[in-house]
Image (cartoon, rainbow, N blue to C red):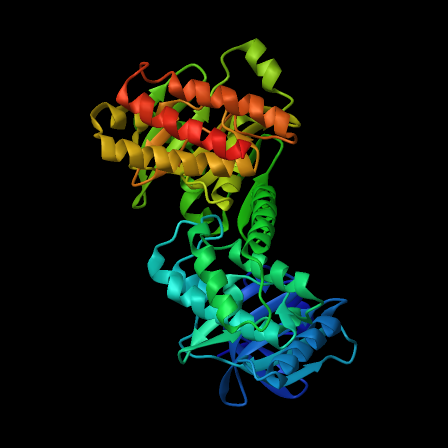
Length: 473
């Protein structure tokens, strides 16, 4: 039995109001049984029953409720008039005071977003090629939408659903008119930026097959890189504030952040970090950091505690973010750029008011071995594979002006590809000159791992030289 609540009560019910619940839509009862997306106090999207049929309900609250509901209806009409697949609006309305509005649409059974279909994570661009055909179908839909003079301004893999072997466009409040050739290139670039870069040429070609106006791949690629950088930076900023993705807790003595989906399962771990470290397998126990490996509820995790070596060290670190904070944000940002680094799971800082103490970083465990060990026994074909992967990593670091700061072989793992670890000193440089100096130090540090004229060094040095020549050209 669903309890009927007011829109005012829904607005104050938090991130996940208890279900099932019923709302009175001007005399007709809407019963919501599943939340699909919520923005507390502003927007609630869920599967519901209305007049005996299963529907998708969007409830808008607050000052802009009427405007947002109106845009949703308008966008849906635009798509349907252009004969583009989008769930039709069944009913829409508003409260007389204008503080709540709703849009009830057709519900697509057994639907799956492109994001779900290909297993995309918001912080990772590492995907199997089996998902590429689904992305190709989406590129075809985008081309048809552009041909109709329309674009999905908030374009992302979650806004395309697959049902009945068809790609459907949703979130119609963001359907806008295209304004020239640049809008097409930019819109496609934003879409590509959220998918693996090796897919981009194929998706661009798929788009071109149906588009009535050609787009230069180099232009689209540059826009995709630019947007990828923005998205990665935005994810890093979100990782230290309470939002739909992350849960943060802050007090006079402590700050912590973790993925919201992990918050319940990690709570006992985060409340007893020193105890868990003491009972775990220690990988490194140095003055500056203690690193341990644990099994936690079926997951292999690594905890890195950044120690303070003495009074002077503590005084120097008091006023700036801990190395855990820096590594937490750097990990999210790098993964958003397609760099493979262990997924950051949680971060904790000890505090005394505004002063900061020790930091803790929890990441997923990587099964890879460091390059120093791998190269000891690797034969020439594997060494060339490693060199090619290193060249790809350096291209990304050059494109976004990233330096590692401690680029030694033990901070690069090999797991069917390169995995970058130990992000304490990672930097994004504002100027090309600053990056070039830092990059030269990174490359010199890496080469020092192997003797001159050794096969590993020859292969790695060849990759570095080829990358430098590419930059000069």
